[in-house]
Image 1 (cartoon, rainbow, N blue to C red):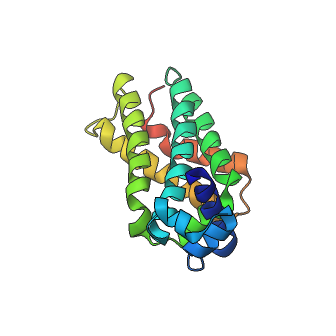
Image 2 (image 1 turned 90 degrees about the horizontal axis):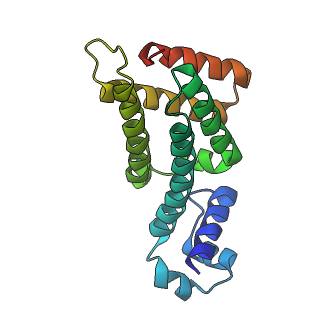
Length: 184
């Protein structure tokens, strides 16, 4: 039941947008009564939180799996496939990403986003520390935060804005952007 409601919430959010989403619309989409929906979710915000949480969890699993698969690789050999995996995941659900990025108030979705980012920052920081990357006075955690935030922002904007930059060229530029932090 909860899974059906979350899937329905996702569908309504993508189709109708944040402002038009209501618990009644989600219940109708899920084929349940509004009363049944309220047994699991007290309001619209709780449904949206569950939808975003599921999306964040799936995205986090894909990205952390990509990073973990390449943790022994050096520099660009680790970054390029991870950026590709991130772009693939974002592009698969671009309309939902648009709603999350452009319609849902940041405060409602910041804790899930921050948890995902911290998980990835932690992995990248551990990678840099384990590789003893030559970062000068920069702490691995600082370098990881900058890299993850830059890649996150630029990949989201790339997917949402559809610039005339070919994907391969975009990925190459992102790799070049973070290459200074990466051990060879």
